[in-house]
Amino acid sequence: MQRSVRTVGLLVLLAAVLTAGAPSIIRIHRGDTLSGIAARYGTTVSALQRANHLSGTTIYAGDLLRLPGQNVTATRTHTVNAVYVVRPGDNLTKLGRRLGHSVPWLRARNHLRSSVIVIGQKLVYGVTSSTPVRASAAVSGSAARHRAVLRSRTMPSRAHVRTLIRASARRHGVPASLALALSYQESGFQQRVVSPVDAIGVMQVLPSTGRSLGRMHGRQYDLLRVEDNVEAGVTLISDLLRATGRVDKALAGYYQGLGSVGRIGFLPQTKAYIKNITLLRQRFS
Image 1 (cartoon, rainbow, N blue to C red):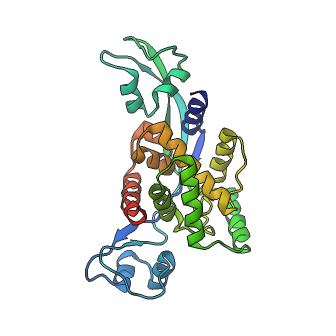
Image 2: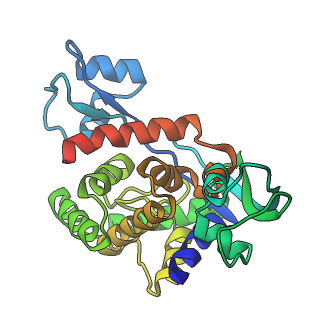
Image 3: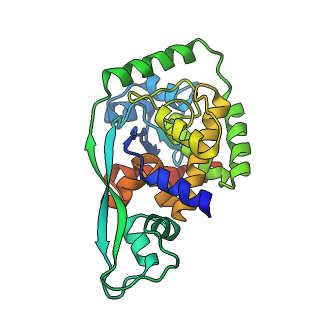
């Protein structure tokens, strides 16, 4: 229980979180062609082929197609303490859902010995505000250095990456289809991918997130190593699943940040992200 509370607290109360937007996924319809899709979405046939590992131009109705370079954004979220005054009919379970925290987290944060609360009681919880930001020069420089390092290394095959993800998912009790769909959505199983805000590798983990996970789990993650990158990403989604008890909210936490979700709900791009991964899970089930 103590470790779970500490994990939830650190996930929610990170002072600043940068979230990289993920590429879009579309479903191919009868009559679609690569050239037509490229024209529709402002990209090229060759870019679509690279993003989807296609050797030719043949596509099939019903399949999913990854659009390159879509929705690359970043959000900075700042967390502060807020106070909620208990009203008639409130209980910790209802408040946890409303405020974006688990019952153990609320109890720990407010030093409650039980789940009993009374009308008029004041409860402290974390809220965040989110603003779009451009990557700083330091972040852009770090991303460029990471790209250079990864370009110099031999990269694992996508089949090997999928094997690593499945093994890590088993260790952490995460559905393999979820972990695989998440990685495909984030990077297409490509370790060389580094976003403008320095999200690295197959699981698109930020260096700051890797450091926080390391502190929580008592180990170091070298995100430039595919094994550590996979382990960090699967560990994060595992922690979020335990913290929220819901797949959609865990995915929202991975993409948007759990504190931001608790404060303002799912952003439109977060809803699209969850929908994409839900569709992708069918491919990997």
